[in-house]
Length: 431
Image (cartoon, rainbow, N blue to C red; front, side):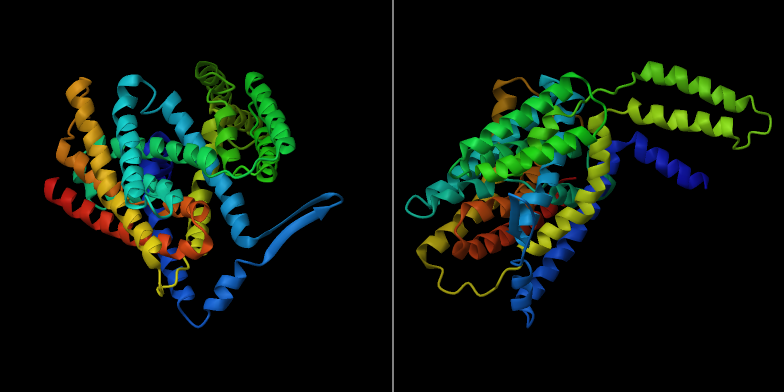
């Protein structure tokens, strides 16, 4: 019993450690989901696998009607919750975390920017006369896989390197969200955009009123999701926008919580029998209620979403989107250029952009590496950042026509696997 209590306390007091464990175990589930998807897509049940995700589901109530294929409910609906979590993590890091001061934020932020620009430039150079719309695909890093791979190297990995890679991946996710919102949006329906703006205004009011309950933000965020979906903007942006308005400060200050909690516990201690009487149960419920609101709405929502996202949303996304046929057929010059651009962008562009930008910043910006971290570690982290997978695949569904998506996804899969092997081998040698 004591061990279980200690484990629960450890998870609470060490959120970063819990984050690493979640990401590493989630990556194992995702690998299994991808393998299953590849087996299903290239077996006798291939037709059933693909048709399953094309069946239309929805709801109709009067004039309101929303019907979409299952694959779009996953990519537009479930992934909106994933992006809500991304938005919460980004806000937490910038408000209270590793990116909360300029000195902490500048190194991973510059590394992430360099690691996004260089892969995009490499892709563009290789596709000048081809499919240019895919330049955003090799920009992204899969945070779950990158962190999961780093944990495979054991306790010898400097903690500063873990923090650097996690912070870089958070900024990388933010850049990917901006790319999706700004460059992969088609025609816009202004009437729904206006209602979307009203939803954002309501979220702003909720934030300014310091509403501590999570439900109002989720309800208004759901309305915003529908408005953006109908407006023509990728609906997952609603998750990030909603996250920006979820309060990061608790409703009950910590000093007030501490004083009131001590008073309730003192009443329980004064009971000689210390049994679960009606009065003691009232004090316990009071402590639980206060503890809930002593944590910020942001941290409570992040906590409730993290496991669901890691163990449900990401494996479902992987299983539904990684059903690739190994038969490339005649891909033509455009397909070859797309494949080369994605592979070179992830395997070469990512480490080149990250390491180059960090080296330049250290030379001209008087910035030092985290304690225990050297440039060889940064090179290895840059290689691991070439694991695109989730975000790269997600962007590829918007960047390419359907006939090109199989080529793009296979390139992402191959390049990510190569980046993982190279990164692990290099870091194992230099740690």
